[in-house]
Amino acid sequence: MASSLIRGKYVVCRALGDDESEIITDGAVFQRDGEIIEIGRYDDLKARHQPDEVIGGPGFIVIPGLINAHHHSGMTPFQLGSPDLPLETWITAKFGQRDVDPYLDTLYCAIQMIESGITTVMHNHALRSAPEGVSLDDWGSSLVGAYEASGMRVAFSFFNRDQNHLVYENNDEFLNTLPQSLVTQVNDVFPFSPISSADHLDLMEELIKRNESERVHIFISAHNVHWCSDEMLSDVKGFGGQHETGIHIHVQETIYQKMYGTRHWGMTPLAHLNELGFLGPEVSIAHGTWLTDSDIDLMAETGTMLCHNPSSNLRLSSGVAPVNRLLARGVEVAIGIDEAGINDDNDLLQEMRLAQKIHREPGVGVPSLSSHMIFDMATRAGAEVTFFGNAVGTLEVGKRADIVLLDLSRISEPYLDPDTNIVDAIVYRGKGEDVDTVIVDGEVLLDARELKRVNKADVHAELKASLSQPLKPHEMNRAALSSALLPHVNQWFANWELEHADPHYRYNTRS
Image (tube, rainbow, N blue to C red; front, side):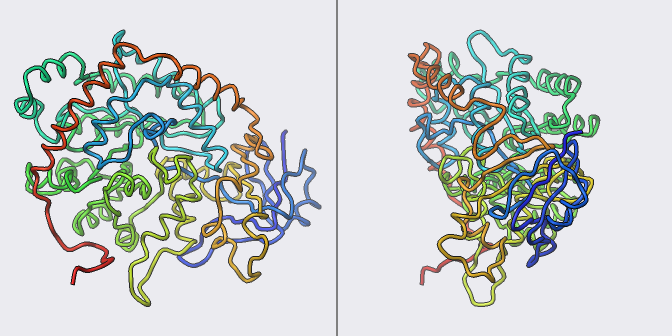
C-alpha cells in the first residue's frame, strides 16, 4: 500500500468559523492509498507510522487542495485577441476568436491550475459547431480525458441555450434592425443551434454512463435564464433530478440580465427560476452580481449555492456580487476564476485576495470577510459546489488526500510578525508561485514545481504550433461577422435605460 507523511511547519486543516481555523504547528498528515489516516504533530505521526516517503518539511504550509468553482477554458479570451469589454459586447467579440484544440486547451488549463494549487475545478463548457459538424463523442471524451490525464478532479458540464442568441431578445427582432447583407452573413455563419437540446441531454447521459473515475463528476448545465426557454430549463432540472447530478447555471451576471427579467416576467431571472421550481441544494449559480434582497432570501430558503467570480466581474464591467449579504443569510459561496482571472494565470490564491479586498465596505466597525472565511470559500465551499464535499475540501481523517504544500519562504521573508495567523499570511501574501507540491488522492502531481504526469513543454509546443497555423476559411468568416455585428450589438444595448436602485454596498457618493 502506498503511503506518505506530508509535513509542514503549519498544517491548516479547515476553517472553524469566521475568525478561526484548525491549525497544527509542526504538524503532518499521514495518508495511505489516498485516504487520510491520521493528522497530528509530525513527531507523533512519525513515531506511529512507517510511510513510504516523507513529503515537505518545516519550510512549508500544508493546506487542503484549492477548488476553482467556476471555469470555462484554458487560453484566455485576451490571449486569443478579445480585449475586456462589457459582457454583452465581449460575447460578440469573443465569437470571432479562432478555434483552439479542445484537448490541448483543457490540458493547458489543468497545468496552470495544478501549478497554482488547484486540485478540483468546476468546468462549464460551451459547444461550438464547425463546418464538419459537432462530434459529441469527440468533444466529451477529449475534454474530460484531458482532466483525467492531468490527475485533477473535475465537475464537468456542457452548457446549452436555445433562444436570444445575439442579444437579449428574440433573434428575429434583432435581425430586423440589421442591413440585409449582414442578415445573410449571420444566417450563413452564426451557429444558432450548434447542438440540439435533446442531443445535449443525450451527451450528458452518455458521459455519465462512461464515467468510471472517482475524480470526475458529470453535471448538467443550462447557460443562463434569458438564453434558455422554460422548456429547456425544465428539462435540465428534470435531468439533474433523474441522474442526481449537480446543476450549474449563470444568473444575473450583469444589470442587463436583471433588467431582462423585469421586462419579460416582472421579476428577476432568479425569481423566475424559483417559479419554475428550478432552484434547490443541487443548484449552483455563477456570478449572481445583480441579486436583490429577495433573490438572496430565495437562495437561502432553497439551499441554492453561489460561485463568486470577482476578477471576471471586474474585468467585464459587471460589478461586485453582494457576497457579504449572501453569507449573512447562510448561502454557500465558493470562488471561481471564470477563465478571466486578474492576471490571466489561473492563480486562485490571488483571486482569494481580491475577493477579500473588494468586499470591504467603508466604515469603522463594518464587518468584512476574514481570511478564514475566504479560505473556507476556496476549499470546503468549493467542494460542496462541485459535489466532492464528502471527499475533499478539508483535511480530516477519512477524507481523500488532496493536499497542497506552500513554500513559506517568499510569504514569510525577510520578516513576518510571529503572531501573524498563518491563514492571514496565506490570503494576504500567497501566490501561485509559492505552490511547491500538489497531491490528489495521495498521488503527487507536482513535486518541487515539476509536473509528474504531464510534460508542460510538450503541451505548450503543441498548442503554439496549432495556433501558429493560418486561419481557416470558417474562422475568417466568423471573425468578419463578429466585427460587423459588434457596433449593432453596442447600439442595441445603448438603447436600454439602466435601472437605478439602492446598492448593497456603498463605496462613494456624488455629493
